[in-house]
Image (cartoon, rainbow, N blue to C red):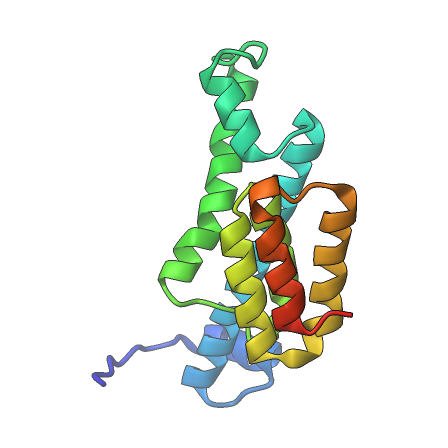
Amino acid sequence: MAMDTVVIPKPAYNVLRRLTGESRPDVALSLALKDLVRLRLEAARSTSAAFEQKYGMTFSVFEQQWKAGKIPEPHGYTVEKDYADWEAALSLWVEAQQKGLRPNNQVEMIPVIQTLVQTGKWQDAFDLSLTTFKRQPRVQPMLCSLWEQWKEEGSVPPEFIVTSGEVFAELGCQ
């Protein structure tokens, strides 16, 4: 693996060292960047949740209604800005995933799984649930609780009922 040399100014290094508790600059920088990604993903999830509350629907439903002209003032500044910000927040997860950026603690994947469900991406939520469980089995109770909640709410689409049963089986939910 090729390595590039990067010069980190002393004040930046001091901040990195204090933030991470790591004296090695390469490790400190890596830890700080991972934290930044985690924070950005959490901010994206929060942004998405705020828009869902504001409009009373997931982004996929909003997008369909916006394209169909069913959203009031679809080309007004506020609605177009909300659309762009909402779409950007959701695409952040996709970009992070493509670059192989993931949190170290799999508990941090729970909000991402919730966002995938809220945007109607059930298969992605299923796949990520299983991957999360395989990487850190202690998240099993949280995952089982989420899938049980979605099942009880009736939010699981009919075509996905069988798959949700597979989730319970794969996770060992009671």
